[in-house]
Amino acid sequence: MSRAALRFSLLLLAALGRAGADSEHDQEHGDEDSPHSREKGPGHSHWSYEDREHWGVDYKDCAGTMQSPINIDTAKTIFSPQLRPIQISGYSLPANEKLKLRNNGHTVVLELPNSLAITGGYAQQYRAVQLHLHWGSPLGPGSEHTVNGHRFPAEIHVVHYNTKYDNVQKAMVQPDGLAVLGAFLEVGPMENPYYQEILQHLYKIRQEGKEVSVPGFNIAGLLPANLKLYFHYNGSLTTPPCYQTVKWTVFNQTILLSYNQMSMLVTSLTNDDSKPLQNNYRMVQDLHGRRVLASFQTTLFSVKQLSSDSDGSAAAEHSSSSFHAGDVLAVLFGVLFAVTALAFMLYICKHRSQNTRLDSPTKSKVIYTAATTEATA
Ligand SMILES: *[C@@H]1O[C@H](CO)[C@@H](O)[C@H](O)[C@H]1NC(C)=O
Ligand SMILES: *[C@@H]1O[C@H](CO)[C@@H](O)[C@H](O)[C@H]1NC(C)=O
Ligand SMILES: [Zn+2]
Image (cartoon, rainbow, N blue to C red; front, top):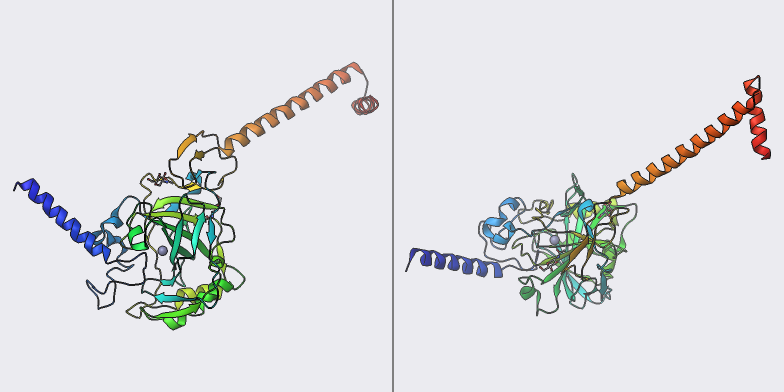
């Protein structure tokens, strides 16, 4: 066997080994963490947020070029009128339908029945699997995505898989396998009754691995009221194994929780070392040339536009004219100024010629006469 062939076989073996290891993992912050621990005690998953800069060593996709989260620079987003409002169905669950709420050591996960679905806004159909949250600490915010460099207090992710695959495990390794709806949480004056349906149970699942059964409620209440305004891009799971299979929707409208509710979210849970479960967010990742689409015009007069299907695929920029709001305004005010100046000069000239014709001894009288002349004209 030649040296090259040997090296190739070794690489292949390594890749297969890695693939096998990866398949033990579940969806983003999934229900079941692998019992095989590399460093810590049994039941603990192998990765941690302290270790987030090194995820790429064990999970090679985490070092890829289509990673999430990202910073959304609204001035660089591309307005895409083809991005239709996100439509969801089956989100309103009766109280007798019980849902599992679990502390998996990385976040709180609410398992969702697959009767919940995204039925509009994406080119394909997706079913829900679970939702979970990312947050900071009493000292700082903890959203994963940022907008124009701003980090929000917290962020919700509702994970869905493409219905053309049998289940989420199969879907999550396909390029078009997953759709995640993300939205930012901020502090407002009122208690949010939908979030209360989750938050009121957190004290029962303080320790990692604990779970509780909670009554169904209207899950749509956890998302913003406006599902028309959003950003869209191709990215990844934000936790190992970081598969680059997520079509992201990040809503422009935020959700409000009371100050007390935000405190509950940030202080209620612990991880396996009984340390507070806080700052469970990943740093923003490089775009590596990816485009971020917007379903709305982020700046007035923006002419940047894209024609594409509702999925944003097969997109082609049909106009990238760099004629910005500032330019339009500058021209507008320039013309306005010129017209005013011209009118003023004409007025002065007219009066000057009249004044010289009325060869009067006092200036005040001249002006008075001129004014009367004009008024009666
Ligand atoms: C929503 O869009 C506006 C307009 O571009 C932007 O200024 C604002 O920061 C965005 N907010 C979020 C949460 O996306
Ligand atoms: C996402 O990836 C798909 C498949 O490669 C592509 O067709 C689509 O244009 C991409 N979307 C964006 C927003 O770049
Ligand atoms: Zn997440």
